[in-house]
Length: 51
Image (cartoon, rainbow, N blue to C red; front, top):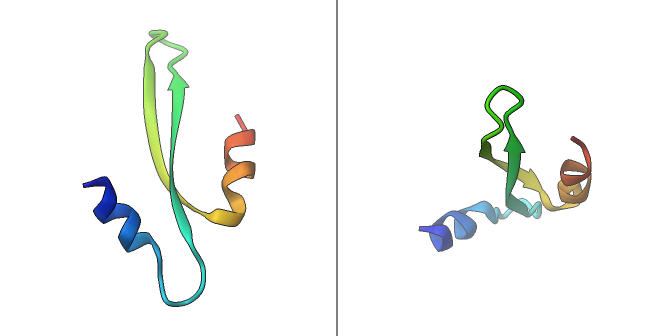
């Protein structure tokens, strides 16, 4: 399934996208959850740098 998602992220418009998965700790329970977002390749480092 991952190959299918990654293959559909490439468009003919010239902009490439990446699926980014971030692990976030819940302040209430202390458990970790995963947040998935689709971000342009240019903005991946900025997205991972912010908290």
